[in-house]
Image (cartoon, rainbow, N blue to C red):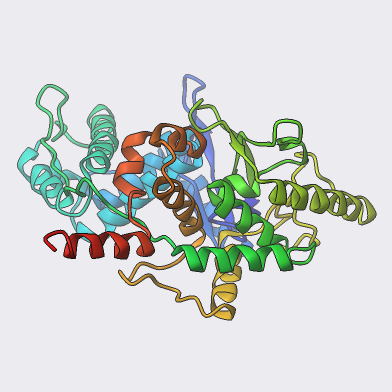
Length: 392
């Protein structure tokens, strides 16, 4: 089978996969292979068919560990995963390729010491939760390698688990947030310049005023604004890699966020103009998206919403126009996610309860303490002056 990929990480490439049936009638598939041209795909398909006909074995003990793990993942795991989980597997594949480029699978045959040393090194780079994920992934892959006869014994037996450690990220890990003055300048600019041509401004404004994630703000639908209760219903997220709208399944993520009268009026006005524009150009909008992309489809397909890279570019251009630094005084870059952090930080300093902030932000109180509890510059300076004069 040869198929051209139109969306996601491999958009524009050709995916090749062949299959055969054994004597019992069970179908076996080769790992997916991604190439740049159709001619190259045809050559690989031909080679794979010949290999299958002569008793094809997808992996062997002499192949590099990262290569075996990649083939195991593509054949047995990848078809059943959500996009976020795929990212975790792909990150581990890259890590193995960098750290253990020449180590064959058979090197780890029953070699628990070697795999323990590798996980010790991972523990110096990643948090404990991330290392535990990697342990689970590799444990399953080694178990299958043992079952398939590629190695005699897994180095990660379930009865004697590999010990893991992780980098202590610290209790408080502030993220970048704007000062009150800069946030006000940015907010006023968005109100003055939002229109159908610059719809990204309204997306960014909603992030700033309502604390939505970029993927949540983009996935808003026309009927998500409850005019009678002045609330914004957040229940979808945009998965850019798959160009798909995904409804939330966790109750904490789905929520209703208060909307100011000024923002509510702007959303209503924009929505009316947007719906007329979509109807005029006969653009399909099956998800009823407020920020549906109205540009014609490209060779990569019909993108539902604008890309994250474009949203970041728009924000940086506005910051430059307003002479707002692209980094905080701590050296942290200002990104669209910064607007969400600014929203939570302002609410904290205004005395809004952490429980309510967590409820409308889709967070736990612990996460807010860890990431969003940085003081606004103005508040920090005022508190510092109080401390300096405490003995006067």
